[in-house]
Length: 62
Image 1 (cartoon, rainbow, N blue to C red):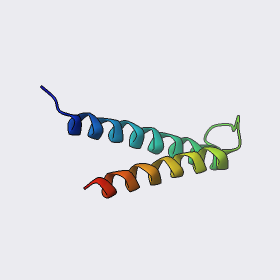
Image 2: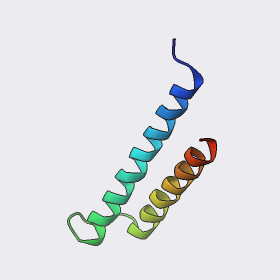
Image 3: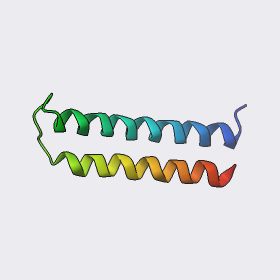
């Protein structure tokens, strides 16, 4: 059976991947590889904040 620690690590991993995806999407918008449908700085900020929250929670609990 999986314990709570494994599920927490999975949760952190999923949010970290979402953060990386948002940051890549924002950088692609800034470099005009895709057309911006929303301000890329907003997406970049959301991705960076998600990354900081996960990094803080991960290292705080260790």
